[in-house]
Length: 189
View 1: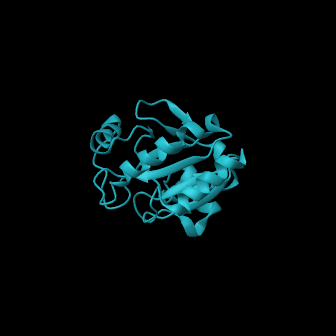
View 2: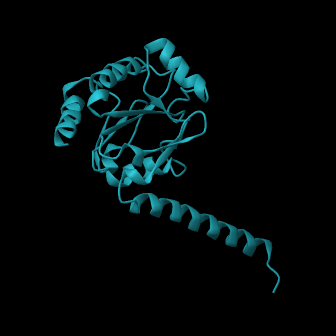
């Protein structure tokens, strides 16, 4: 029986829905954050499993955002806690207001020049919606009320790879709420 255009389109749509469901199911069923990797600007993978046993702060960033000053306060946080085990990963995103016009290593370089940022930077990544990076889909499934609504949203992953919490853009990286949570994780080890 020949396939009509309508049947063919329906079949293609069904396959796309299954693929989208599969990506979502994988993100939701991942046991913890160690299941995920981000790409560095140079293309090599930055596997979260490589930081097993350490708290990881993952922050979606944008160089042209009004909150870009947080690159500098994130650097202060990094200097304070890196030697004690904190890993900090900036995840540049253009999802909010189109505020990340740069690509690749230019993003990290701009943050370094403007704010002294020396922590790790991932490749520019989608952080919301169905095409979001799998880590962000997993985190949204874990903490649906704590998803990014703007640039500089912060996720803290515990030493065990579990998501401790999401912190809004307005949360100061060196403020008591985030510093206390990081301190608890560092003491837990």
